[in-house]
Image: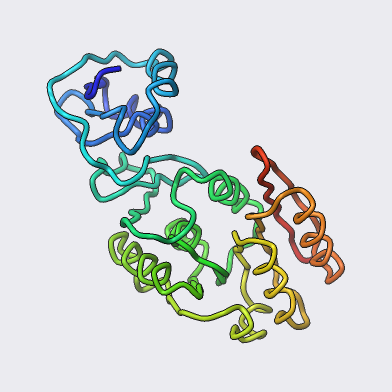
Length: 260
């Protein structure tokens, strides 16, 4: 597997193929296309070989080392997620820039990916990212123009990382970051906001305990196994939310529910 390649093609062809190119770790645009470092970001050569073989654009190996990127790039849910060291998105593709940190749920985590795909099923409006972790869901919601976001986490490292990523992405004016436990969230904030909650069952139960009436307009859930999702989604259904979709990747589950 080459450490660095140059993919050639006109800008519109590169843009159409960018979801596949993102998996090859784009690091720099050039006159003839884009350069990628397929082994950067901790990518497994066994995974990258078939991705490179399936690429529908011409490429050549070029000189250069694999840069020390903190995590892989990815496209999903209509958003390109990258570190500051990755190449910017092509024109027309929304992007968010995630800074390195210790918050949960960076681009490659399956629960994050499922939640991003399910955002399209939720109505627009202000959102509450309950347990924001790295801030990926809050950033995506704001970047897609869905609404402003209140991002809450008890871990100060997560709040710091989300705030830094919001600044790097030019979204600080759309995202308010706050350190708080779920039982400190104002129930009125939950009732008026679309809830994004990629969090373990104990945290989901705490959110349910503080939420009042009415229920939020909609919610996307993950961070749960099948039994946990049965329990948490069922309790939200008892409060008037209808299940719109439920997905699984390995042991992890995600669901989107909308107020009836």
